[in-house]
Length: 120
Image (cartoon, rainbow, N blue to C red; front, top):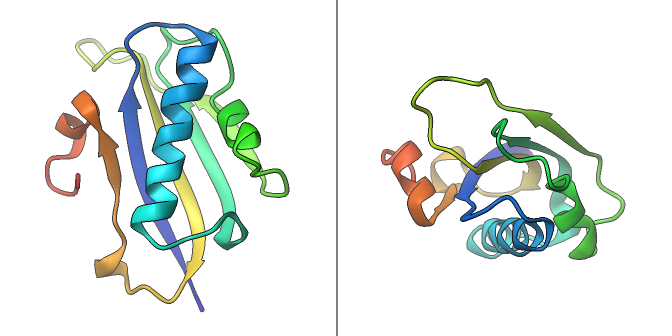
């Protein structure tokens, strides 16, 4: 079993706690499904949010999905002029048999523009 990292992001339409939980939950679900993972395959998950998001912690969405025994942490993205607003990013460390080249990174909606080279 190898340790790999999988990335993802989603852009929110507004800074609202329920909206954040819905979209971040969808992002996490897509990361798991597209990589054939279950929550037990997660080692740890980092979330970052742009400085314009402060209604809730993105990690709350993970807990609501039942990801309760995985270390989670939230941080704020750098405040860079011209950066895409209202974005939550995720970096999940996983245990998997997938080679690095087969890991599917998930950028949903407008966030796909952030990483056109790897967005699925």
